[in-house]
Length: 253
Image (cartoon, rainbow, N blue to C red; front, top):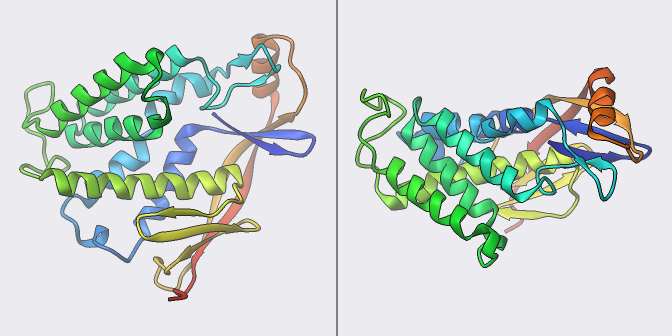
């Protein structure tokens, strides 16, 4: 769950909708090696579904008892964060082992600040084993061949380049969903927010100006007394559409 401050309200955006936006942005990407990469379809699939493990948490938001506000993807309890990625890999591997490997790499990268935290030691080891297993897998868990989304013989350098594309889409989408104002540098691209528009330098969209609607539920920004009270409030909240945009800017170099 993304919890975006909106004055006297919070806007709640599901992780799956954030991930879908990340994939939409990458599909429009025209620069670099991604458009011609044989693994492009696998990268787009992994990007669109990288947060599939959050679906249970999004369906039943968790209350932070210390603050009375909904837990977002950062503040949810540690054990439940770990379970999210186990569910994601279990859901993805039957469809694409390569996508499962990319998402395991994403878990390792997203939580890198916790690398030396004892509560995370076993999680990092588990995700590293999963990444290496699915990266080298020749078949799906059911014994069938990996198919078009699971390229055979992709070397580690190309795998890391593919993960870089997923991470780029993820960060670009997070900027729009959270309305982050701090500029970001990802994969030789400079990203910053101008109002409701993501500006990317150099222009990756071939001169296009893109528009997207992000589904969100608006609830009052107040202290909720219990998880049940919070979930009832979310269930009552109508879905509204946040209109966001993305466009490229000419390089300043």
